[in-house]
Length: 180
Image (cartoon, rainbow, N blue to C red):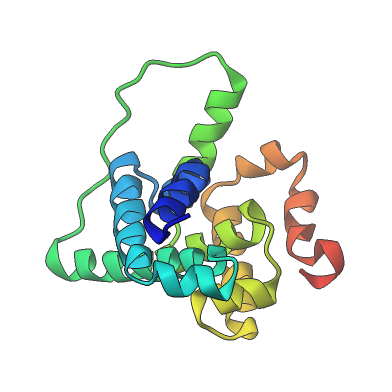
């Protein structure tokens, strides 16, 4: 299989998962699409080297998280903050849709770094060491950022405690799983 064919096969098999992660990071479908596109363009430049070295997933994820932070920083410098736009959709009686909105709004209240750490730790179920490697920071930074992000969520979005069952379940989340 040629490098171009293997890249197309990889993208075809991973695009949905990459898009979900990008959406969780950005909180916006269009920004997520941009993030995935920028990531894949950068990955394509090094594809032959990546497939020779084995599984390219680690490089792809590290590139995505790095690009997310870089894009966020450049947008922050270029554009003044815009107030949140009101929801235009009517009320939805489906509980799962309401839960998704609560989670989306809560994630939007976090900094991009906090959001990236929580997505890595709880959506992708990565260890602190893996998250630190992807983000290019220390394990202690991942721990403190996780702690701060969860504290911020508890303060700004107490309704998340209802989704987790009780507030004590949310408080215990960072310590579950043997320190992960």
